[in-house]
Image 1 (cartoon, helix red, strand yellow):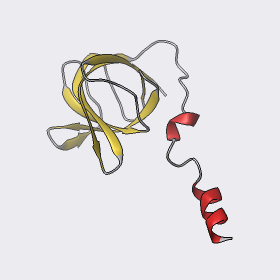
Image 2: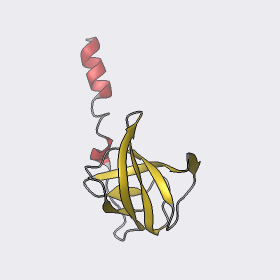
Image 3: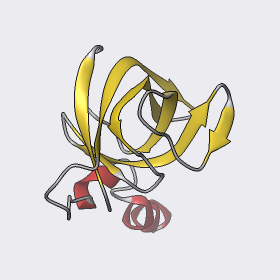
Image 4: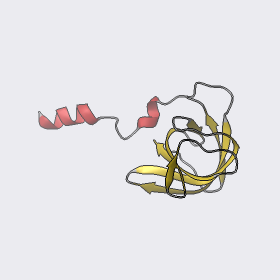
Length: 108
């Protein structure tokens, strides 16, 4: 009984990107991925904002879809990132990327 309740309650927790979809049609910006790492179970993308302004809650599309949960510049969390900023994006979900790719950013 305990195992089935556990599985029913936590089933699908490892795949949050399954319910994520892109609503806007026009990208809000572009992000150049330089490095990919995992910190405390979250995927973190390091790179440069090429176009637009990026806010937490925006979605990344490239090798799947994931939601931006946090933006960091030099180990400080910031409210947004603009063109030219070197940032780390903490994601909810994972993207299947290789290094040195350009991905699109969409509004929620």
